[in-house]
Length: 210
Image 1 (cartoon, rainbow, N blue to C red):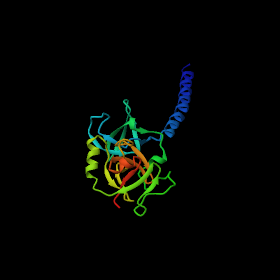
Image 2: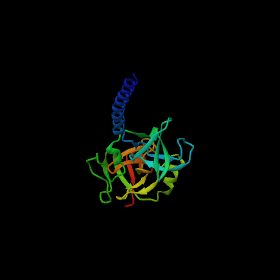
Image 3: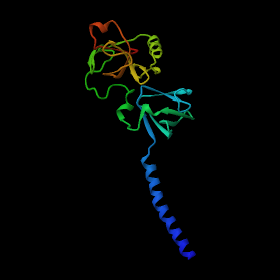
Image 4: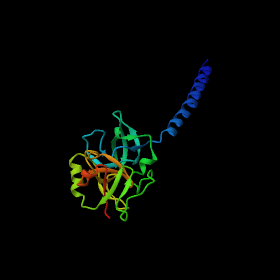
């Protein structure tokens, strides 16, 4: 009787192992543990709360590998060799190639003329485009004071950037400050306005260092 019981237990254990292991392997294979940032700028924090310490930022289109997901919807990641967290409301697991190229030179979906130093003005995907080259420190400071988050930098082709977006001036009644507008050079963020806006409300004046 004891031998039969041991055999039954052994058989049950074998079946259990055979059914459990493949399921675990399938779950591991299906989970790539990557998310893509959907916000223009996303704070990286020391813990999974909005009032915890800021460790840095991630920008729209960036793909990050996460370690775990918390009960309140945050993702645990490794950031600069530290354990950190990002809010799950501003990322997606539906990773799209187009978002990764939002900060690259040019607009890959636009097949019309592209604004440059020589032509001075073009008709882009959203209307007339011109360019200007001024000190952007005041504009960046204004954006930050209004709650918009982004680092200022200059792209290889000379476009002045705020986070992952080209800075531009526009008619604020048509394109409110902080809104995103497509241009021949890529996606712009409206950070400024100018006198041109009254005569051509759909014109974009793009910030460059040309």
